[in-house]
Image (cartoon, rainbow, N blue to C red):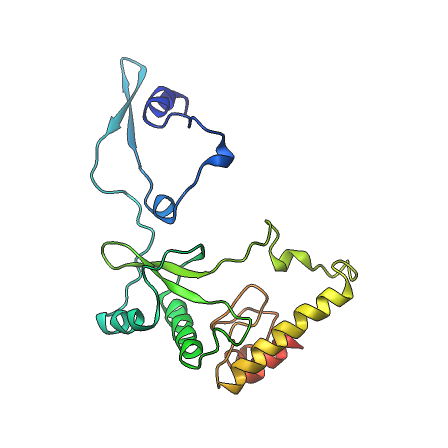
Length: 217
């Protein structure tokens, strides 16, 4: 990187404020300013230069849905309702479509306000209608996700009473989904909406109510 240091300092100078005060939006994260450089060797000297290009060499996503699916999506999600959300990147068209169908079933059944469930606010797309990800309920975990809070070697941390409270909340949510004939799907602490993760449920019953119950056991 040394040959490009002077160019980087000029094009991307250090901010005037402390790093912790910098606010980065979802737009900034997915569509940042970018620079393309070449490094030429002239008379045995390194000669860095910037190459001006219009389009970014990297796209956040190549996943798209048909117009009918998008039109239906807009009828039950709040595409432009400003709020603080959790952004879940889209990495699989099949997975994300199944997850969206599950969220629609939850919305149609009116379970958003009745159960302790994650809420889908909308879908993040680019100008070419590629799906970049989902905008979901933001939960402030203070930098420590639930999956990292529980370790087999520490049965009393967190306390048993708190673990039982969490289990009761999860059990109530899954029972409520099943009463509405909705399947959790990929049964694990950090997942929802379909798919399969080895070790949590037998593969042949993944994506079924029986699989949900096995993952809860």
